[in-house]
Image 1 (tube, rainbow, N blue to C red):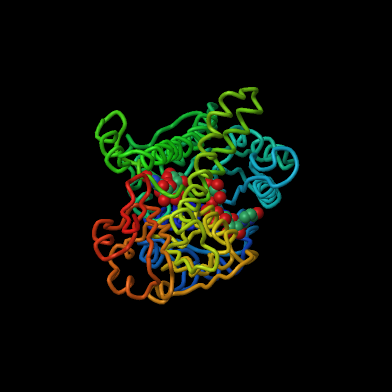
Image 2 (image 1 turned 45 degrees about the horizontal axis):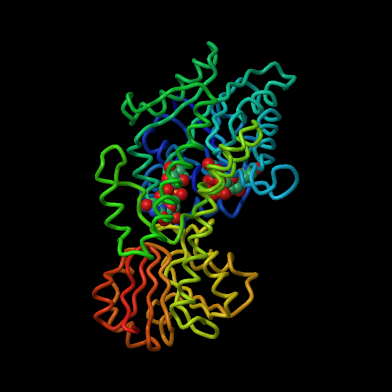
Length: 457
Ligand code: UDX
Ligand code: UDX
């Protein structure tokens, strides 16, 4: 083996990223460690801890050959020359910056572990999304070692999206690598370029200084989320007028300067990154004395919260101003299709708001039911978790569709209509269903940002 790479943190980012690196670079040994023994056991089993299309095959090809999962953090650190750090950086829940700043305690602990167990110089690569200038702090902690060791800190943010992680990693739009502008920093940079050059065309590997790289990641996520909030804000206006948000998005997106992606109106964006990264950006701007800039970006999160509330208000208003004791089938709990991940899913906020109105929930999701149970464990009210959509709709007054799973478009809605209470309502929070057809079956249909189709007036 040419070199040994270690990754600390075997989560949604670390696991798939390292699996693809091992798959594409058979002459590198790749070790992935995590303090969570259960997670590591799952990575070593046939039931991987995360669901991601294509991941099983990649892991099967590389595992045991040059890809290894372990809980032995210290041996991994000792052995590897290059250490990727992909531990989680949740939003702080306490003290200064609570609710906005990133909680860096795992990051710092990891840096201290690296110092403790290192016997030779290392390159430490930030994979987690972090506040700008974290690398600097990291470098200081690492260099405070008394062993005379040198550590180079590289920023290499991950841009893959869940549900398409493997294809995003195999064929990225760009790989961004930020390094210190010193001779040793540039040498470390080359080592990371060498890894990605195994499968990524050189012109797609972008290099910057460390701060630009860190900031690019935060701003990329903020810009993507901002597009969704912009469209969602206009969806509210469309519902009050005769405009249709799907047509408006298509018309806007046809302008090559705007582009068509991330203009799908929805019940709101979720996922572990968008909200956290925007709040992080907001905190950073406040910290540097830029309140106008902070306020501008904070609005993206506020519109997202507003969109979920608006969705529930609409449900109650349309169902004769009350959902109390009415069964509502929730179609989809994952924050997007093709993942079992529910972190920050709009389904969580919508479910809580519906329960506050005393609705009874029958939650169905093809991959995320276990996570849904954990998310809703403290909720007050009646919730059933059902792994068959046709069971979930039995006796329901309404369906609230919250995730864009393709299978929702393929169901037998004539049968579903028969199983439901009448009048039957569908609230399509993702605009994926055939609304006209549902209306013809007999449903009262309420999409996002489009005219309602109702038999009731
Ligand atoms: C995380 C961050 O949320 C994201 O901001 C960043 O961009 C990448 O890392 P993700 O991989 O989705 O994303 O997080 P998660 O699935 O929670 O995985 C993190 C893993 O690190 C967990 O398995 C956790 O057990 C592990 N960990 C955490 C350690 O091994 N050691 C620690 O000290 C802390
Ligand atoms: C995001 C970024 O896309 C990725 O580059 C980064 O590395 C991590 O954060 P992810 O959160 O996995 O990826 O999924 P993404 O596809 O960006 O979707 C985020 C949320 O926005 C989902 O809830 C999705 O349903 C929603 N969304 C997306 C919309 O509501 N409308 C759209 O047009 C697109």
